[in-house]
Amino acid sequence: MRPFALILAALILAGCASSGPELQPNLILQRTQQDGGSALGVDPAATRVIGGGWDGTVQIWSLADGRQVARWRAHEGTVHGAVFLGADRILTAGYDGGIALWDPAGRRVASFDARSPITAFDITPDLTTFITGHADGHVRWWQTDGVKLLRQDGVHDGAEVRAVAIHPSGRLAASSDDDGRVALVEPDGTRRWLDEPPTDALTLAFAREGGALYGGGWFNLFRWDAAGGAVQVMDTDHRGEIKRIAFTPDGRELASISRQTDSAVLLLDPASGRTLREIGKHDLCGGVVMVSPDGRYLVSTSDDATVRVWDRKNPRYSEPARAGGPPAIAPNVF
Image (tube, rainbow, N blue to C red; front, side, top):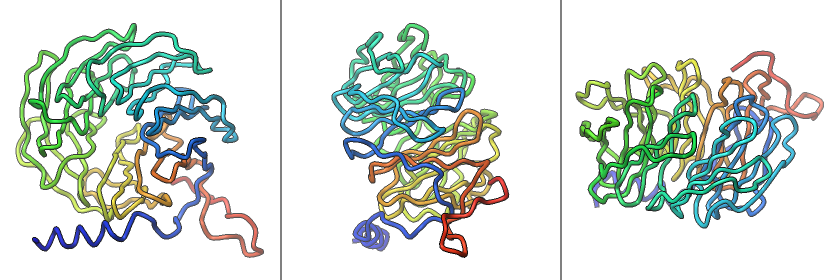
């Protein structure tokens, strides 16, 4: 067995549990069925958070007080996409191959057949276009209004799609597969393979200005110029797989979460991969991290069946008050 494989095996045996966080979450939301989290969304007004899980259940909570607002079974399999399209519409996508529109109470408005299990999902910031990656190797482009299929491309020749990202403009997409390949895809179906990273790209995200594509794998952050060229590999403080990355609205910071020996939520410098801020850690392997549209909240979920919310305007230190009271409110914004 190669040295890296030995180290990797030892790390996996160590598990994902971590020591206490530097910051305390402002809210810890419990998933009713205690299944791991697989999708997250925050509404445009930053008042509600939606979470989807392995068993197909979707839940909505209030960001003001953590109260559960609604819960329903949306899919017969893992939820890979859950987003608010406004105040009164919700879009979900699942491994059962279904895409559905819902009202905020969980009543189905419409449903659509995506033709293959959905393994990855992304949507443009203006919520007009989304893409889905599939177990059959296809990347499918959708118009959000009416959930209209715009086109489908067999990008990965039957290999399962691991991650997708859509350019903020909606005019370019990226996808990775379980054979380690990463592709740029134009709306007309033109495919261009990028320089392969040293490990599978488990997550992808375009920089806010659209000039670069980022990905994450074991321990490292990856960066490709839109023009192609060699992949830039950046070390990070993650000790496992970087499972999900998400840019802050200003594009200056990159939120990340890891799993398989790690459960840390970090804010990274996109230029170097260095840690700008240690946000916190889950009790078990990390799943998803996202930033609210206004940039105020970081939201994450993991195998520990919780959704954790950090309020960037009102951060809480993990150290208790001198008199044994609750964690102190930090005076700064992180």
